Amino acid sequence: MSGYWDPHIERMPLEDLHALQEDRLKSVVRYVYDHSAFYRQRFKEAGVEPGDIRTLADVSKLPFTRKVDLRDNYPTGMFSAPKSQVVRYHVSSGTTGKPTVVGYTKGDIETWSESLARALTSIGLDSDDVVQVGYGYGLFTGGLGLHYGAERIGAAVLPVGTGNTERQIELMQDLGTTAIACTPSYFLHIMEVAEKMGISIKKDTQLKAGIFGAEPWSLETRKRIEEATGINAYDIYGTSEISGPLFTECHVKKGIHVWADMFLIEVLDPKTDEPVADGETGELVFTTLHKFALPLIRYRIGDLTIMNSEPCECGRTHPRIMRILGRTDDMLIIRGINVFPSQVESVLMDIPEVGDHWEILVDRKGPLDMMTVRVELTSAGFSDKIGDLMKLRKKISKELKGVLNIAAEVDLVEPGTIPRSMGKAKRVTDNRKV
Amino acid sequence: MTEIKQISLFVENRPGRTAKVAKTLSDAGVNIRALTIAEAGDFGVIRMVLDDPEKGYKVLKENAFTVSMTDVLAVEMKDTPGGLYEIVNTLGQNSVNVDYAYAFVTAKAQRAMLILRVDDIAKARRVLGEKNVKIATKEEIQAI
Ligand SMILES: [Zn+2]
Image (cartoon, rainbow over all chains, first blue to last red; front, side, top):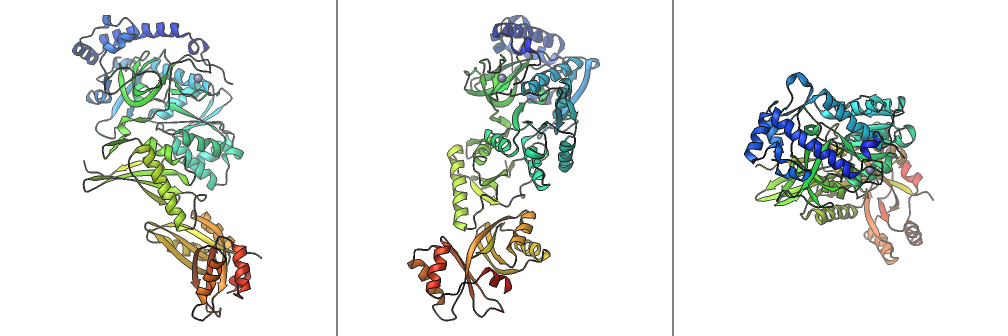
């Protein structure tokens, strides 16, 4: 059992929490209107003024913002704080087009650290822990974000960053790392390298928790990691636009708590922009309630999720979002059907003959899109009878089709042949000429 | 009776893979007694009888190959027409299924040897023995 970092806020009765959100929503709307020409213009176009926002429900009157707005206003056109108050920038390299710049006041860094301090405490970490930060440091928010969060709870931080995997494993042993934060695909690589070095994460290290995110991963992958290493694997969520990694699951592992005093979330039907009910899938929309350099109003991150606003077994009243199903940016459209790489992952990781690493290739043959899924065959899955291997290939193909509704070619490949990643895994290669 | 251990490998159909297998074994001083490749389009299975299967298995595994060890029978084929038929027919009549088979000859051995993977190795040994088919021992294969 773990305690709370800020019990007063984390267990606040819903009524009080909503009142606090309402106050903060009104303030942030007034603040951006007064401080950002961008928002003033947007509000004007939408025919809304700060005075129109009286209740939480009035949030629906506000205009949406998107990543494209950050790009169009590169570098700091959407900022609300003057440069003198900005103490840090992070920059995300856009895979397409211009990068996006985010900024923080001193208070924004505090809020960010506070958010992660609550999260890390909710998975049972405290000042006795050694937290190995295997996210990239630098312009990417992952490394420094976790670093500040872990320091705030008084844990010892091991700022290894990405790469140099053998050294990571040695340090993990020598310094008694108890928690690691990195991408799930990088942790799978660490597991593989440890095995090659003859080190059992279960027996030879003190690792008890993994904080995995920055890319979608499935429950099946969680199961594999937990069974192989004996650790508890927790999902972490956040993107640079809303500060960086901010929220994790609590020890109950039934959704990621989004701190309602800091953020107002909506889950909307992407077609109608109307809220969907608890338990239904929709697009996640963030309004920052306590962020000053770059506040965001109704920011459409493009992630699909399911909200649960019931208080949690852990005693926290803040709403939870279920595992992110996929980012709309990552969605592939193959023969007119939407395919999320995370769906492919959940099918594959449930098949014991399939190794931990896989990739999707998309090609166009004539008028037809072709999807090929390449999987590494495990030693346990290897039969020296060709017929068995053909059957396995058929089985994988059939299970993919059952979930995706489209046929996929399956290639069985030798272990170690699919590229390993240190950061976000590149699972998809789309060779279609658009 | 210790059975003969066959080493099987999963390989993608890429240039140089079979050569890599051969090099890995020869660097370790392991000799290949017999080898066959079964292909299925973009991948295949290499099956081998080695003079030191334990060592071969270990070095291949260390070199990240997907490898398994399987019990097989090595039987001598009579140097007359119908030699293969007799073996396969005997097994079939006694409802022993043959998963696969491949033959090899060596300079020292008098006759061709047939490697068989069957679903019931003990029964195969018995029914072939009754027909006076000579079954090679592990030591004999190692000494070839
Ligand atoms: Zn909880």
